[in-house]
Length: 325
DNA sequence: AAGACGAAAGTGGTTGA
DNA sequence: TCAACAACTTTCGTCTT
Image 1: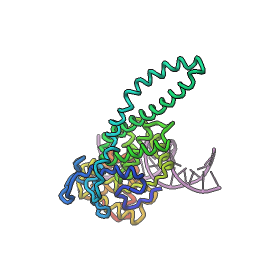
Image 2: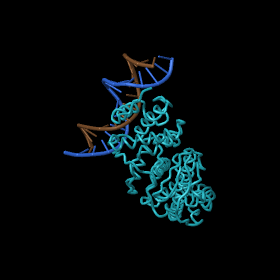
Image 3: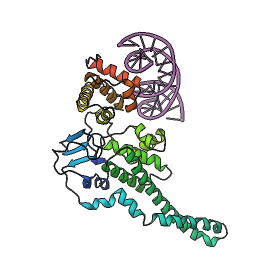
Image 4: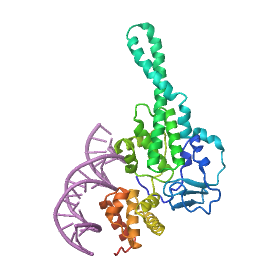
């Protein structure tokens, strides 16, 4: 159900394990003084969000935490960084994996011959498993990295995603499932936790599996990890959609204002947040004389023109907004 | 001709027996 | 497990600019 809660800006730290808390990008905090920051160093967006309650500033486009008033935990966090992780992994990975594959093939031919080989074979299988999981872990991290950069995600989200994957692996949630599905789901999940949600379609576009599998993996993870993700607010989508439509910050504010009014009047209940965001942006753009067609908005947001129409009809009527051209 | 409109049938996920 | 259900999509014919 979409209950359209207004405020969902910051990551839910409670839901992540302690290890992940280590990875929220504290080492990545870029600027010292917060007030003079005008744009995101990662993606150049000007839609910065200042959350004074949590004393942090982050990018409304990509979610990069630019500054926050928290204690720096020091440089050791880097040891858990994904980049480091794969570098360290080389200790066991590429070398063993080549030797190993050879070893296995020779052994299989022997294995069918006698009992004497059984123990050896078992041992070999065990290391095979160890190496396989390690290998797939490395692959998963590289996939997270690949998709993240395609989606322009900041380091803090990438790290959170890597941590989540590690956690899922410890709990043996990966075995028997496709790595691609799980990693895609984890990315989708991490973006939502950080209040900068990507749509399922956007994740699917950079993933190698279909939408159906991603959402299945997503639901599976939510259940197994007992995570509660607050339903995305339409507001979370506004900065990114607006910048994709090349609409300025005045229109962003207007769209957000419309969304706030709508949710006060409970017009958002049971409706998809993306559709609400799309319609609000559509209306806000017209009100500011910067018309975008329903098609334009539809392409960027991934909701159909029909849905945009329906939402925009409801909103403009119920909120008494005159949308005259 | 492009954009907007809305009816009607189809889809996939959720819910409750 | 299955059927009912709501939101959303697809498709398509029509109206408006």
